[in-house]
Length: 251
Image (cartoon, rainbow, N blue to C red; front, side, top):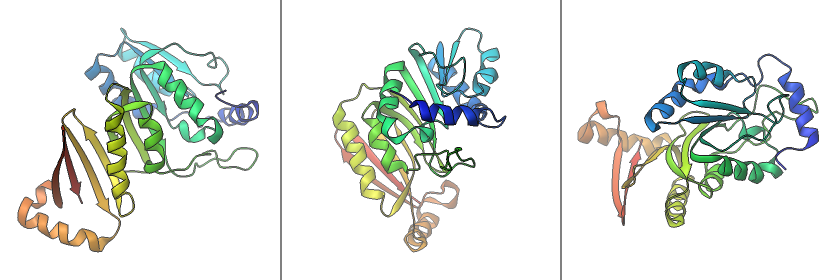
């Protein structure tokens, strides 16, 4: 079960307001880039709300099939088909925690190629009518990542704002790579904020920023003398994890 009857009713009440579920269009440029760069022919907006993302993109891509699904919106609650690209923005944080694994499994089933996620990590500006904040899940990257990498492979990740923005693909890489990636990130999460992660098949590049300004001061001074201000790189650590090249960039 993806959503309980009680939670469906609470979210239907929120959807009656004009501004709830209307933020999908914020990601239209990013999703358009994904469609173009990966030659996508079918897109599903999962948790579509007022379908602002679909309305923004559909007129621009006449050769792409667009679908919308939202269990708390009348007319959009039918189980959707599998598609090449699933977008799920500002949705997963609203899921009941005990239903999250089912929802992630559903996303895995529906996605034949790519999954684009945007997950806020803080509270929402709205509350449910029972008094709870609308964001039932407020967790940081280290909490989300193992759950996502259990089901998908990483393409890119950005954690520079209060939103976790990530592009994933249907699982192809050996599970050992995902275990390695999680273990590397866990080493840094106590003292560093993970800013972004990219993997091109050969090199894994992770950008981190120290929480303490004292830890940032010396590397920043080194960047002035070694790498220059223009690059904005404070310190560069290069190691190897055969056959993966690991690059850690510290700010």
